[in-house]
Every structure is written in structure tokens, then in C-alpha cells.
Length: 79
Image (cartoon, rainbow, N blue to C red; front, side, top):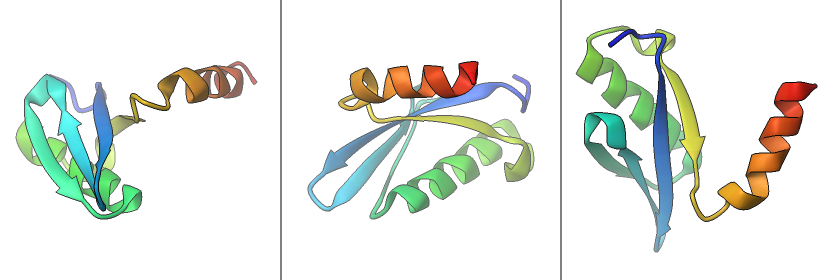
């Protein structure tokens, strides 16, 4: 697995916490904030694949919002 691979991170709100899952590596944690969720996911993936956290590429996804935010992300990529 290359560190330049993109890793999908699924985020789900559970009460006051965010569940953070990286399905491709079977990694799971939780965070109080979305910013913290990204930092935790990056650190977990970096440790799992054995590379520095700075080179990890993440795709953060909130499945419940994906139908709404998907078209926005596509428009940004086209621009």
C-alpha cells in the first residue's frame, strides 16, 4: 500500500461524539470534534501503513450528508 493512496474515512455522529472509521484498514476511534477526527484518522492510518502522517491523503465522508455534499465536491473539482 502506497502512502499516496487515498483512504476513505467515514464519520458518523453518535451523541456528542464522532465515530471515525477507516474501513480499508479496519480502524476505528472516536472524537469530540471533526477537526480532531481528521487528526486522529491521519495518525491511525500513518501508524498502520508505516509512513509519516503528513503524506497521508484522506477523503472524509459523512454518509448521511454525502447525497447533499457530493455534487458540491464534484463542482469544486471541475472548477
